[in-house]
Length: 376
Image (cartoon, rainbow, N blue to C red; front, side):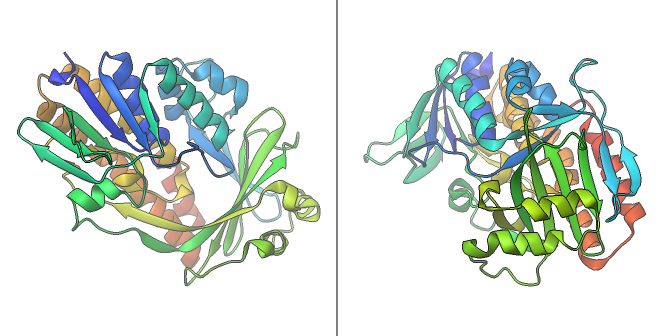
């Protein structure tokens, strides 16, 4: 059926955009994918994935590739700053009884898996390209991709991230990204035999975590409170992160601090958040992923809900009689789940910044993980 859609345009070649492009193409839709980066690169260190994301990768036929490249485990272990275990949160095996409840992978590795799927599905990928105008009309979406000759599409999807140009063009009154008063440090480490699952240490004002991303690598993340979003010079990254790690008496963390160097690819990023109220669509144009619900990493669910968006949208396109029915059904299925992730992640940040209850922090994480494990 495909809701009468013969040709679709995806703007943005990140995780959500690639998933949407591949899935729609597999359903028989002719798909163009615009990606502004001519190298189609994915930046960053590791990324944590929920079982719900593994469920989507399984549905895409990509779970085996993930298991080859990444790392999967069960549970999330919460510790005090001195290694004392406070609680272990369960992560249900939603992708199947033989698939662990969560995992991690290097961002470039996951991007490569999805890129190969996009190409194999027959998507026309246009790198170093974006749009100059996009207009929803009664007969479809007309998009000028730079040569002055608008092209016609039955559906357009804005998957162009936190600072989405599609959102700014069609929804100029939409809320802008907001700095939440925290930043995150990330680094790539050798994977220690002591760390068998996602492990977090909760300090008085800092939180540090480690997750495996392959058979021999892990990635470290540390959230730091910041009153203002000021510039941090890259040549200070290693020493600054080392000093922050020194605040944890944990022998595991102290060993990491001792060994930290430029070889660990330290990355710093201020944390921003944005949840756009409904509607997420205008005519035949819809927004997905960070373009509409950018979340902080406190639930490790940003990529998860973006990839889910893509799958749900493709499902509704396959089920509906018209584009408008498909987009309305997509939005109805996604709003509450994505709102929960953005708002609960924000509440976790508030608790960490203002020294709130660790019991509430653990309860929110547990409830959120339970919700994410539910059928999409």
